[in-house]
Amino acid sequence: MTTRRPFFEQQVAALERHGVDCHVVTVPKPPSGARSLRDYVRFYGRVLRESLDGPYDLVHANYGLTAPAAIAQPTRPIVLSLWGSDVWGKYGYVSDWCSREFDAVIVMSEQMADTLDTQSVVIPHGIDLNLFEPHPQTEARAELGWNDQQYHVLFPYSPSREVKDYPRAVRVVEKAQERLGKPVTLQTVSGEPHERIPVYMSAADAMLLTSHWEGSPNAVKEALACNLPVVSTDVGDVRSYLTERSGSHVGRSDDELVTALCDVLERDGRPNSRETMVEFGLDQMAENIVSVYERVLEPKREVTAS
Image 1: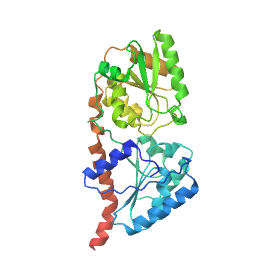
Image 2 (image 1 turned 120 degrees about the vertical axis):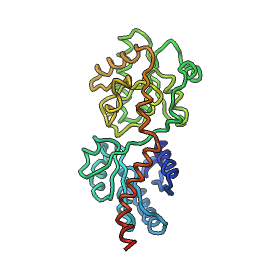
Image 3 (image 1 turned 60 degrees about the horizontal axis):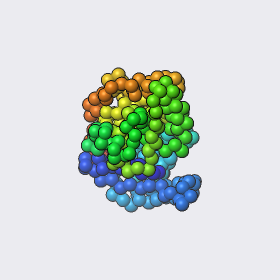
Image 4 (image 1 turned 180 degrees about the vertical axis):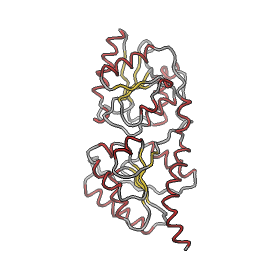
């Protein structure tokens, strides 16, 4: 895979709890921070050597740009997981072309499945329900030093990530403040340990997602598990989570997002959206992925038995 992320680390841990022995190989990141074609070529060679020499049953490529490396090794069944930006981003054509060569393809949402020119199975990333649970808002705000006389809107990404469209989030919050006549602070969070994020989600009044595209954003599911209302653009599978029951909203235009955000901020109390997230736990995700492994390995086992 390219870069190890918290949700991927959780996936590996969950799979190992379900009896899967995982060995993770990442594409080395040079000091400059930008991977070159040479970095990927070297990575392909490493995957080829390790898959040929190691006692592995299959190769699971995570993220589209690692797909060619999995295809390059000829000895193991191959599974591909696509995350979202590798389908709709700059190199989406790589994912689309490579996905046709895999024994199984996993995507995060039905929208992603409809985009690909091959059959796939939808298995969203799971969330750690033991970690992401509500905390008293007063205590969380005191811990973070947030002003209790303001509304606080969480933007859980780096402002530099273009796909997240931070400038639009700023516009929406500024317009919401004008309508409400009360200070509204946009709280950006990036680089914090994953274990700290539930504190921010408990302290905030709402979470704002203004992405251009997404697969199945974990931040949305994690927020709902903390009973934090979410206002989001209509991306990935967020519409399926942001129902009236969750107290959250989807908007397409800036005006729709502003209206939804004002509605959420002026509402008394938080909805119990956590109960809608139970089916997205890590163990359920792991069981679904293991079932994919078993399916692609079954032909091999039949040949071996014969």
